[in-house]
Amino acid sequence: MDFKETLYSRRSVRKYTGQLVDKKIIEELCTAAAQAPSATNSQPWCFGVIQNQNLLSAYSQQVKALLIGKMEELPSLQKYHALLARDDYDIFYGAGTLLLVYAKPAGPFAVTDCCLAAQNVMLAAHSLGLGTCWIGFAQEFLQQPYIKQELGIPETHVMVAPLIVGYPASEQEPVAKRAPEILFWK
Image (cartoon, rainbow, N blue to C red; front, side, top):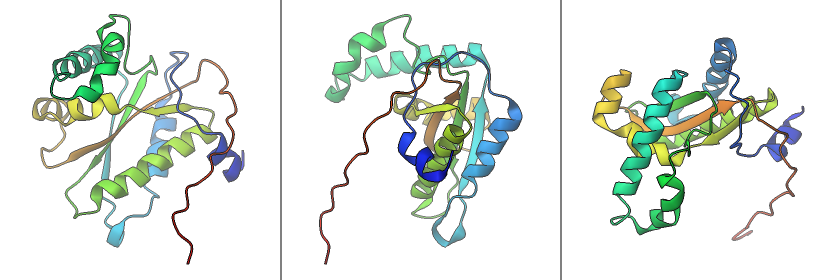
């Protein structure tokens, strides 16, 4: 697959086979992430990988409870209440791998730099026939001090991108190219 095809055909995947992605492939994705540009070449990213299915299942349940508990203070979450309340809803969609991108304290652009690294993961994964999805529901949960301590993440590091990675259960439907909104051209 050439770069343009990779770029234009990548989509978020929410249905997976459950087959675990090999450690060498996950390492390859982290290496691709580390090739991202960064402000002043700070390279502030670091990664964590969770493939323990019991831990992913427990985290999914905890995230759902956390978000349901925040519905009153965050009305934008209310539209997800029915989904989050379902016992069978797995926020990680059975992907089997959660690849976490954390930002080390490296200045004001560290989070932005890590977003670039996350995009590299998603594009590299797609080029290898894998699916990914950025799980925004998990972001705040994974930033909690007790979770960072449990995972061995220094408290100074910031959770940027919780990415699920796995083998798609079906081929993705092609989607038309999105037109950019160009605000000015001088």
